Length: 74
Image (cartoon, rainbow, N blue to C red; front, top):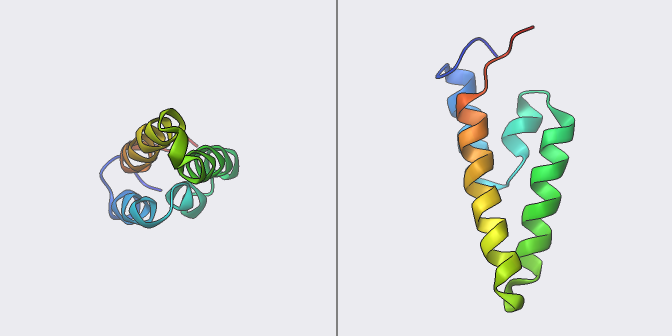
């Protein structure tokens, strides 16, 4: 990805709206994608316990912001 706010970052953020971690995967960041996906899917699966669902919601929003503001230093 080129820089923060680039078209690639916007596309990645939109991907994260539909499935957490997908935007990081599009950016080529496998570990971040796995962490966001596991925490969010696990938390949403335990929605009846309330607290895991809240944590999953926070991680979902964090994954969107992370994809949108990612800057590749490589």
